[in-house]
Image 1: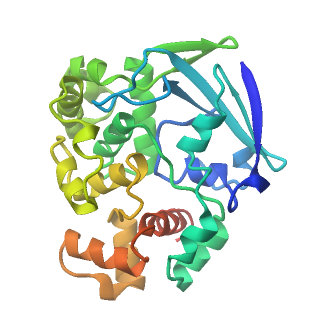
Image 2 (image 1 turned 90 degrees about the horizontal axis):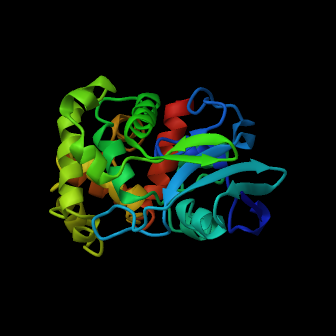
Length: 309
C-alpha cells in the first residue's frame, strides 16, 4: 500500500471528511467500523473510509476505462487527510472530494440567510463530491422513498453480491458492479437485495449504459436544463434523480435537487420559491442560492436539516 497525506490547512476553505462522505450525496464509500450514517459523531472523520476505484478515468459509456481495481482508504486526523492505497491516490482524492474547490470564493456568490448560515457553521468544510457516473446513477435510482441509511445499505449489498473483489493488506474489498454485470442480473436477484420496485429500473439503466444506448457523454456539455432532460433517458430517472446525478457526478454545481428535506426548507424558509412545479420551484431556489453554485448551498441545507432539523 502506498501512503500519503494532504494538509487541510493548505486547502482553500476547511474540509470535513465525515460530513462530505455521510451527507447523502455519495454511496461508494464505506467506513471500516461499519458505522456510516449511524450518528453525527464529531470524531467520525478520524475513522477510516474506503472505496474501490477502477482505473483513473471513465469511458464514454459512463463506466470506467480500466479493469484494474484499486483500493483507496482515507481518514482525517491532526489537520491531515491521511490516505493509504494500492495506487498513488492524491490526485484521485483531490478530484473525487473536490479538494481544489475554493469554498470562500464559492460562498461569496451565494446570498447568505439564517438557515444556510447555521448549516455552514455546523458543517464547515463539507464539499460536494465528484463521483463516478454509473454508481451515482444507480444509487439515486434506488433513492426513491428511501432514507440515506437504506440507500447506503443497498449499494453495499450490490457491491458485495455483484462487484469484483480486491485484496489489499489481507483485507477483501468489493468494487461497485460494472454496468455489464448489473445488466446481466435478474430482477429477482436485485429484489432479494431490497431494491423492490426499483430493481427493473436499475437493471434496464445498466443495460442502456452497457450497450452505449444512453451514456454520460450524451449529457455532459449540455446546458444545465437540457442536461436534466437528457438524464431522463435512463430508466427510473425523473427530475430529482437527474439533478442528483448532475450535481454529484457530472459537475453541474448549479443543480438543486428537490427532495423531501429541501421541499421542507422551501415551505418553512423560502415559501416565495414555491412555484407549483418541480422545474419552476427548482429554478426559483437556484436563483435564491445565487445560481452558479446553488448545489453547494442545497447540499449544506439538506445535510443540516437531515441531521439537525
